[in-house]
Amino acid sequence: MRYLTAIVFFLAAQCAFGQRPEFKQKYLVPENYRMIGVNASPLLVQLVPFNKSNPLTTGPFNVTFHRFVGTRAFHTALGFNIPSEGEDTDFENIHLNFRMGITKRKPLGGRWTYLSGFDLYFSAGGLNLRADPNDDEKAIAALGPRWAIGYAIEERLLLSIETAAVFGFDLEFGIPEFRFIPPVALSLNFILPR
Image (cartoon, rainbow, N blue to C red; front, side, top):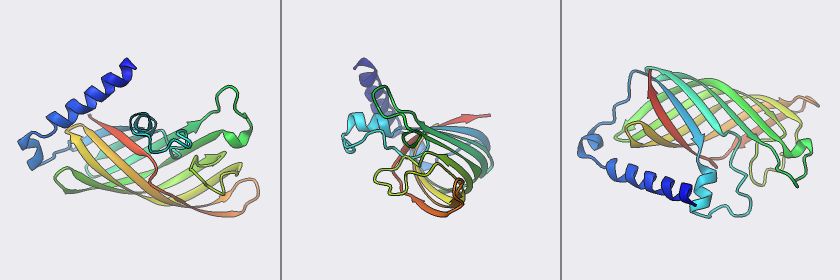
C-alpha cells in the first residue's frame, strides 16, 4: 500500500509541477535521445478499476525502447504474460510478443506528439488482447504499420497510447492473418538524453 501511495504522490507532483508557464509554451526534446516506455495499464487498473474483468489483458507489449536521432528512431518492444501458480500453464495461456521497427515523431504543438512507424512482429501464444477470438495461435510472424499519440506530462515524461494493423501468417499452418491491435495499453515513457 505504501508503494501505491508513493506512486500516487509522485504522479500528483508531476502534474502540479508540469504546469509551469515556460513549459506550456514549447516542449523541447533533445536532438538525440533514448526513450524507455513501460505499460502503465496494470498500475492504472489498481487506481481506477475500469478493467476489472481481467486486469492482465493489457495488450501485447510491456516494455518499449526507442533510440531517436532527430525525428526518426529505431525501436524494439517486448511483452510477455506467464501464468502464475494455479493457472493453466498450457502454451495457449503464455503470451510472448516481440516487435522491432522504425518510428517517426512529429510534434503536434505544445505537449502533444504524433508517432508513426512500421514494424516486424513475432507473437507466440497470442497478442494478450481482451475478447480476441483468434488468440489461440501457436506463433505468428507479421509486418504492419503502427500509430501513437503522446502527451508530455513533464519535460522527460510522456504518456502515450498506440494502435497497429498487423498483416502476417500463422507459422504452424501458414494461414494468412490480419489483426488490428486496439489502443488498450497506456504507456509511461521516460526520455533519456544521450
